[in-house]
Image (tube, rainbow, N blue to C red):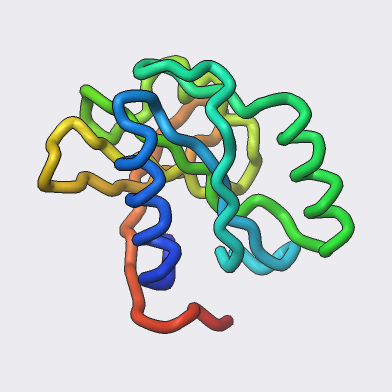
Length: 140
């Protein structure tokens, strides 16, 4: 199960809507070993594509240095699908490299309704998980 505070959920959806028609991407970091998403970090989709996302190399390197300095890890990897459902594509599954992360997909194919789903992807196996959105920051 993934628990997100309302402001993080809203920020992910807003980023996805803002970057449409291109895919948006980013991460939510949290304290190492806690599986607690706390810090929203939007990233640049270097591919600038409506069907593919790729973190910009320099920005990704900077992110991982910052995570190390703050004793954090990637808890959520998110991106949007602009014309399809919020379900991992074959490319998404093949590129799911963050062990233990929640993979969130937001579909922006409908201008009004938002489809927001989370998955665990381990060794090519996709498992959907429940998403809970809470009004205050999640504490563990």
